[in-house]
Length: 416
Image 1 (tube, rainbow, N blue to C red):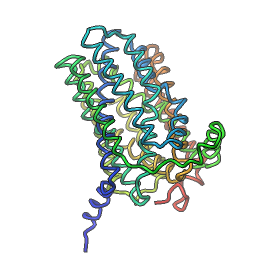
Image 2 (cartoon, rainbow, N blue to C red):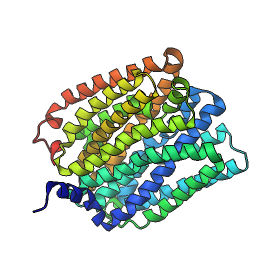
Image 3 (cartoon, rainbow, N blue to C red):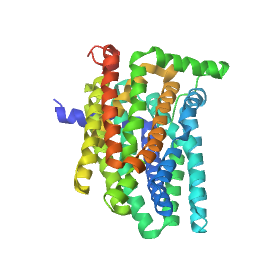
Image 4 (spheres, helix red, strand yellow):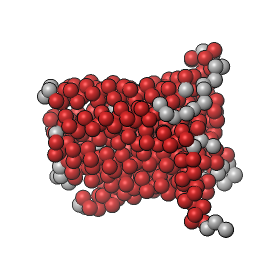
């Protein structure tokens, strides 16, 4: 008889039995590492060159400028194939990284150039995660989807651990140009591996439908499905009030609150990411035992609670510990949310629903831009506390408003 422990190990590794996943996992891993290195290096560059937290938040906001067109990427994936769209996106990443490498090597880099390139990348990057998730769902049997999504999430989480530390170390030790050579190579190899992912051919039926009709159909589906609508509102909320504290604002916290350099910043980013990575691995082991909607609500509340601790705990050591716990809760919120949406959408709406889900990321630049001005006027602690309390209150309101769709064990949103 197989032991429970062995069954758990078998479940978490089962997605690697699918050939496409064996290509997609390292492709997503390298792309995520390159992206995290890039964001950290350029965020620190903007802050040190300009000395402005407002410009730092503007740079962070530019990373998400494409959220408004994310449904178009989702529809393009449904029509042309999610692998094809994802491959094209990754060619652009590699090309722009080559441009950055050249500018840095020629000592021609300046904050304006960084902002312009970030604007272009920001049109594409918000849709990357949606395409990844849709491609996993497209190639993975349903009984392995939760484990596969947990493993897929580790590509992003591990990047925030390793990418942040390596990126900060390379930048501090070697300078901008050598660091960007590594980033460019990671993007290029990630693109090459993406080409090896096997996916079903897109249906020809969609090509005969109106673009705007397809878009309206996808939006109507989300609006008319209570659990999906609740998840979209929750995703917008956490992007506006939770993610800014652990993404765009960490360089400010490192420099102005803890008075540390690039390495200290890397350790803060890595702490949150390590917790998220641990949560993603836990999801991979738990697999089908998870009730997605319940877990999404419960761990959103825990996430905000841990961020409140982070804001008020004294010293960088306490900050790192609270960030680990916040990252753990974040994974146990966001991954079940994605699985719930993918299960509900089915093959017909998968790309469009994940594209609409990416619209919620628009809350992040809004939250970052507002935080920049509020911090300059009221300080970091007051602003961050207000964000956390607002997020916690609205999470509970969402849970009550859509309780019938999210909480009962027999609700479709809690199907294992």
